[in-house]
Length: 451
Image 1 (cartoon, rainbow, N blue to C red):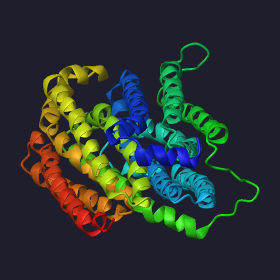
Image 2 (image 1 turned 120 degrees about the vertical axis):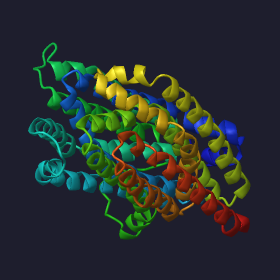
Image 3 (image 1 turned 135 degrees about the horizontal axis):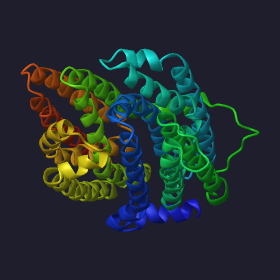
Image 4 (image 1 turned 180 degrees about the vertical axis):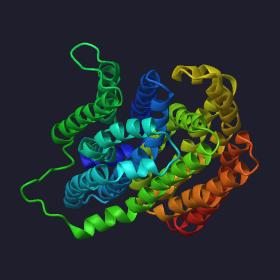
């Protein structure tokens, strides 16, 4: 597919059809990824509740790893899509190569983290030695073998930026299916594998990421003629790296805030019972069934908005954002219904104890209405990034989670009632949606009105 063909597709195809065309493969692949995340925890829960709690405590570190990988890739994605709109072939190639280079740099960072900082991190939380053992066994493998995660993430975003989202569905499916197959075999020692429990869950994840990275690299090299990968002539380009991180760092910070928030919430919930930490982790696994498709939708939206921003077509930008919000709200309303009416059935997937059911059902029913506001704030946040205004996304996330959510959670925990803590999600989402709408109105008047 040539650049001119993509220009016709992202610049001329009817907006809703284009959005579905770009997003549906990503949404489906992310839905499978959500399934794999849940299946992973379902198998771990069969070991015992301490193992499930350890997975919940590992979540902030994994979130940080995902934040760095996706944030860097978003910067490369948006910048590359803009250069495609401007027909700057040389810059497209350089952005791709520098993006892959930054992925390897990210791996080195997390390898060091895995060697020196995992146990100290776990020991800061109010948990038993057995939970620490489970968490360390899992996280050391995940971080020290994270090269495939970063390469796969960047490679997929390169495919998305050039409009080849169907291939990203295949790459992510291949990794997720590999993980799902290997999980029970390596955790419980089935067939040729020894029983490895938490280490087995980690290795299943890593092997799945390696498969995904290899498939994604193949598609980029063989099926993506818009990018020429010139390894021999490659030199890191400080200007391009700066431009990638100018867009990507706010996204990294924004998603890293999720890591800080999860860590803070674990500390607050741990004051009540370790089971509350397990519930919090399970909640995030389950809500990924709803949120991951929405993230897939907005991922498909980003190159469309970036392309038309480069082409100075404000009308298509507005239509794309409106269509995305409508679809996102529809998905979230379905999620609200599931969480409100079937919380116990969802929790029983994780071999929930009576205490876990009591805490979890209450938590899910209280948190679920916040999904509606999340649909709007997630969509507008992605639009800010696509328009090169990532700082606004970062600001919304910072206010939502650090200024509102954590302090409100701590305040409500002082009542001594665990159920009151969950209301912090509703309060935080009200602030997030208001701030997002305010920023979008400013962009319409100061940026889009110029076209």
